[in-house]
Structures are given as C-alpha cells and as structure tokens.
Image (cartoon, rainbow over all chains, first blue to last red):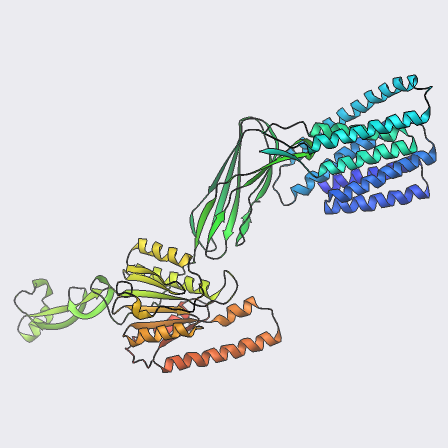
Length: 171
Length: 425
C-alpha cells in the first residue's frame, strides 16, 4: 500500500513538468525521473528516490526555462509538498518491511507530514510576499548584486541546517 | 537515550541544494520557493528532542520447553507521555523460527497507554535459547531524527531434547535391591508366584497354597518372586559428532538418551548419565522426576570438546557406574577410543548395550547432493555395517539406529532375554 502511494507521488513529480511544457527533452527527463524514482520505490531505497526527485527538479527547472512561463507559486509549492511527503513515506516504508503495524499509525503519520508540509507552504507564501516587498526596494540594484546576495543567503541557510543536524544532543 | 539525525536528512539537504542551485542558475523564483517547505520540514523534524518516558516489560511463556515446542514472547510497552512512533525489534536467535506474529513492530502510544505485543517462536534443536531483549527506536517527526536504546533484559529458555516414548526398553540382566518393576529370580516378597514348598514355621497363613495342600495332604506355601529395580547408566559419546547443528549425531544421541532416561525412570529404575568425551561429565544414578530434570540439564549442554586424552572407564567411580548396572551407550562409533572404552566396560562384566547411531544420514544431509556423494555414502554404510559385525563377533551387543525412525525399532531386537557374553578385548 505504501509502495503504491509512493509510486503515485513519483508519477506526479515526473509528470508535472510535462504540464508546463510537453517537449522531447522534458519527456526524456521525465522518463529518467520515473525510472530512477520508480526503482527507488520498488526497492524502498531512499538514495534512489532522492536521485529520482533530483532529476524531476531538474526537469521542472528546464521546463520553466524553455517555456519561459510566468512564476507559478502554487505549482512550486505542490512540488515541494509532494517531495516532503514522498521522502517521509519511502523512509517509513523502508522500515516497515516485515513489521507488524496498524493502518491507523500510517494514517496518523501521514497527517503529521501533511501538517508539516502545510506549515512549509505557509512559510513559503509568507517569504514570497516578503520577497515581493523587498524586490520592490531592490528594483534599482544591479542584477549581479542580487544574485550574489541570494547565493550568500542560500549558502548560509544550508550551512546553518548542516550545523543544526551535526550538533548531536543527548538527553 | 540520544537523538541522532537519520540518513533522510541527507536527502532533504540534497533536494534543498538542488532547488537553490537550479533557482539561482535559471533565475526562477518558483524553483527557489520549492526549497522553503523542505527547509521548514528539516527544521521541524529536528525539534522533537525530548525522550518520552517509556516503560518496557519483556516476558516469556516458559523457561523450559522441549524441541519443537512454542514459546510466546510478550513485550509490554507503557508510555507516560505521548509517543508518536516507536519501533520495537526483538532479534531472533539462529535456531528459533517465528511461528506466529512478528518480531518487529511499530506503535503509537497516547499518555498512560499500555500496549501488549506478542509473538510465538518455535525452538529448533536442543539449546539454551537466549533472547537478549528488544531494541527500541523512537522516531522523530518525518523520520529525520531517531533515538535508539536496547532494553537489556535477557531471558533464557532451556530447549531440552525431544522425549519420545520408548515401549521396548532393554531389560537389565541383573536387578538391584530396591523395589521396582522387574521380577527377580530371587524368592521373597512380591506378587509374582514362584515355587511351592512345604510349610515352615514363620510362614504367613495367607501364603498357604490350599490346592497343593489338599492334593499333597500337608501344608504347602507359595513362594513369590521379588520385584526389583535396576541401575541404568547412559553413556553418551561426545568424542565425535557429524552433521548440521540441530540434526547432528550428537543431537540424535541426546534425544535417544532423554527418551531412555524418561522410560527407565518411569519404571522406578535408577538412571545415571556419563558424557564420555573431552570433558567427562556425569550424573549419579538416582530415581524420580528430579533425576530426569538433572539428566536433561546435562544433555542440554552436551557437546564435543576436542582432546587427545581420554579418561579410562576404570577411573569412573562406582557411585557413578554402579556394579551390575545396565549400561546403554549411544555412539556413532567413529572414535576408536570410545570403542575401546565400551569393550573395556563389557569385559568388566557390565551389561552393555551399544546403540550405534548411523552418521551416514546426518553427514549426507549436511553435504551437497550429488552422484559421487551418494556412492560415497553407500560405501560408508557398507563399511560401517562390516565394522558393526566385527564388534558383534567380539561379543559386544550392538543395535543399529538410523536416528530417524523410533528408537523402538532397533530396541525391539533386544526383547528376548539376553545372556552374559564373553568379550574378547
């Protein structure tokens, strides 16, 4: 059951960019994402699913660039929420193999993941609104400075998260 | 209990990195936005760090079972605070099969909730089955953090050799002085009628044989045979072993010894045990249910200890090997030292019966199938048969047991009364 749910999420991830632009390069990338991600779901392998999701993300970016589509926050947040639930689902399913587990536990976990995904979506909406305001102020600034500031911010974010994760605490 | 990040963090970080990299590379804000829920999830997954108060009890349905019987393992979890997801795993020993339920489970507990989790194991082969206790893993949100602990409450189950009923137990040539089930040739108190003789002062009136008295004209009494028990000493050959664990010749021998001990003890005989090998261990002959427990406990630990030195049977004290006892030796007769010891016992006047357990089937089961193996097994069986005939010619009483069929089959050949034999050393 968990495999079927994960397979549906992989299919959504792989096929979603095709709705942005249906073109041969995007199709090939979609096939790659589906094959790698599908194999990961069958084997319940987190690295393979991550690889498949990465290919799907590349496919989405390429589709956006090639289509020169307008910014679509809803689509981006759908992909983000799908990624969160997919990773959590495959990770749990890989540990559920040969284990006794009640269906209510999986439902409860799914509810928890959706709450976290919803919080993430809300945070993204708030940040986007904030970025719109800041973007207005930076309209006169040169593009390289904006890119540099964004890259620095991203770098600091990743560094902060790594520091947070590697800080092993015991109680 | 310490919380540690799981491998899932790497996946989240990878996707965050890709989203940021692709967003900056393509200059698309919506690709960067994809990273935001992932970052939020990563941070939220790391927030739950308080270890919930979880109490675990680990119980077994029995501490002593026989081969093939079931043991039910019950794990009880009690939570004082809410536990969103807890994983419990009880590692299974090599020679225990899961019969019912699962040894791996996930639970979600509310405050003050108690969960009982059961699974049944089938114990294969004699062993001291050790269950080390369950491993417990608490999962954080999204599986991004986990805390592990091992509930160290080891429980041991003694899995005794299977005791099959034996109907045709070899009768001892000589009996002992205690009351038992064997009719002794000696006259005395008993219920089995013997000779008739003239009445003598001191004879009880109830022993008067009135029919003989009327026919012969003088008082005659009926004598009775005494009912006596016997001393039975089981000798287990632990100098050599063949076959896979649980199905080896030694395992078969322990099953045979357990069945014989149970059969003789049920007949009120005194039963002793000698483990003849690298370590000579023994159980003094005694009777009763406690003695069966002692014999089974010794059989449980019987194993081959390699040695070049063996203790002669002359060094075994009479309290372990009483004179006039029936000695039943269980051996594959692969080690010449055991053959020498058995010959020595027979030459010393012990009533000896060797139950020769065939190692061919055990070796064949452990080895790879093939035509060459089949031919070798047949040659080995022929050679072994010739060897047993040679021992029989020397005066040893040997029955051949394949280890698969009931022990009654080879022992049926000993139903006729045996005579003392002269053994050529």
